Amino acid sequence: MEIELDRPVVADERLRSEVHEVLHAVVAAGGAIGWTSPPGRAETDAWLDTVLGSPRDGALVVARVDGVLRGTATWRRSDGEVFEHMAEVRRVTAHPAARGLGLGARLLGAVVEHARAAGLEVLTLGVRGNNHGAIQLYESLGFREWGRLPNVIAVGDVRFDEVRMYLPLGYREGVVLHGSAPGGLGSSPARSAVGR
Image (tube, rainbow, N blue to C red; front, side, top):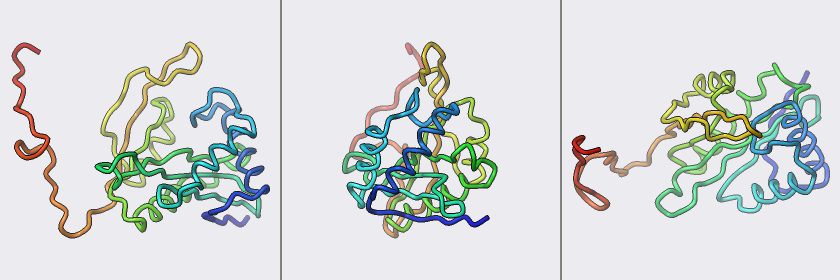
């Protein structure tokens, strides 16, 4: 079995068809990638056009198993000038027929390296709270949880937590890490615990 990773920059008919098949199959199998029911071809084509439409602001990595596309992963730059050093990882998928081959780890590793090479400093992602396997995968690659929104992912009448994770990619020389230290632009007085 041969597994190859590729970073397409143009969506030809073959890529559109294969990406649609993977995303459709993942959602049909219960995958939490943003759709509650399997997306139609127009939806996956529109998503693909958005991802590939601005190479500076994102990238798609695909995995082919014996020449057939079986997995996807993307990063998308955050909006706004003060956040353009960050990106969100999205739609890390493996076709149900290709589960257990390690595609998720390989795809995510390629996304991380591409984002680092693009000069990004931080990657973030959100994952459904009950997807323990994905959380474990992300943690094994260095992602750490920074927060959890209880019961905000809605699938019909069922609610799931959204686990938010991040991975620092490194800072260029000269960047000052101010963190939450008081003072300076954007500062506000410390709040006391009294009266909250």
